[in-house]
Length: 215
Image 1 (tube, helix red, strand yellow):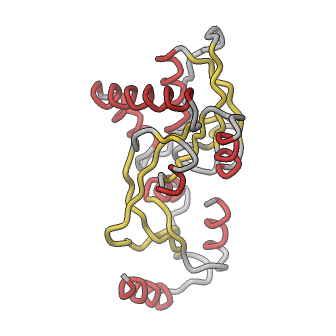
Image 2 (image 1 turned 90 degrees about the horizontal axis):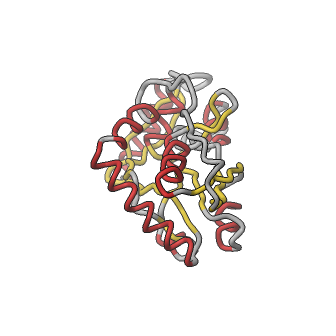
């Protein structure tokens, strides 16, 4: 998505599809980014685990944890901080979990703001906050590294990693390779366009008209 944002800004492509939370987070710092609504199209987003005994345990625990933080209001507070119109000013205050003995290998794809990204050169985002709260609740010691989500899926299959955190879309094909927790959000999909640079109103109107006719 990072490359796609650059391509649409430079006029190399007219638009691309993505989820609205990711778009909204990037658009907080670029008012020329805009979008067209895609009717009746949404994606489930969640955390991925390996297809093994540990992965099944983590899947169950994460589902329990999500239910708990939804019930006590913690989820809403986290979403308000990371995924609304206000740009966060600092990374999450992460608990010191170095004393926990059971390590959890987590790979973060840092290109997925507001879910996982760098803020002041530190890991930040909704899923980073979520994973550390989860590890604190279940007594895990997170061992974190960055990597692309495609390599993360391969790493889960090879049991190189235990968790993939990247705002990943939960598709039926991917469910054959990894275990997903329950989706923590179902997000609308939109078509990202750019209203700055060489684009003009007539051109954007023609894209919109063609796009809406297609759907």
